[in-house]
Image (tube, rainbow, N blue to C red; front, side, top):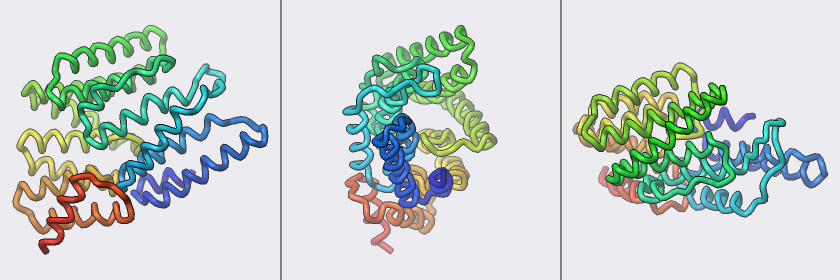
Length: 291
């Protein structure tokens, strides 16, 4: 799938074109009575991700609304798997977290028909959103839900799914620890996950753990360390909106104004042609114009 390559190197328009073609091809086979309608959701996952990186969040939102209007999908892989419920769980979670709408993320509702692992995605986003908007009581409740799902999956001997949920727990827990002033523990947890992701070469479909680490370091008033982590992550995940913006902010805070402007300029280039009204882009335009 060429779009995997485009996503890896941050060529968002090529990524979008490839995945739109994939969705169209899937729907054509369905119209011909060949089935396989569930396969479109993998391409839609990449589309949501790509749109959010290049200032086209309205297009990402359209996909989410489109999925909401779809009927349940037929069983896939003979495992009772409905990819629509996965999409309904993941797409809104990624949307709210990428746009840093913490209160919206904290208010997400688990999808009734979703599998346990998919519900963990919702609780992961809820916990991060609650922690980052200062609602620690709700954040802890969401962490408990994630851990209960992890234990359930272990009991069912679904080891891979349990491991994925454990990672969700660690990421969300780090933000709770940060909100509680336990920055050393939070940084240690996220660094471990980031190093693990780098080794595994995870495909970019979500928020990189190293970018989260950089965000946390920046919020913990450690911009020099945060800048280093942003720079490392951008090598693995180039042209990510929040990676470029975070690197620019960190560079500003350590007095590297030229570097900051370069990152802001890259962000504007990545989002050229988009219709976003995100304040990050307004800030980038103002600072680049000062050159």
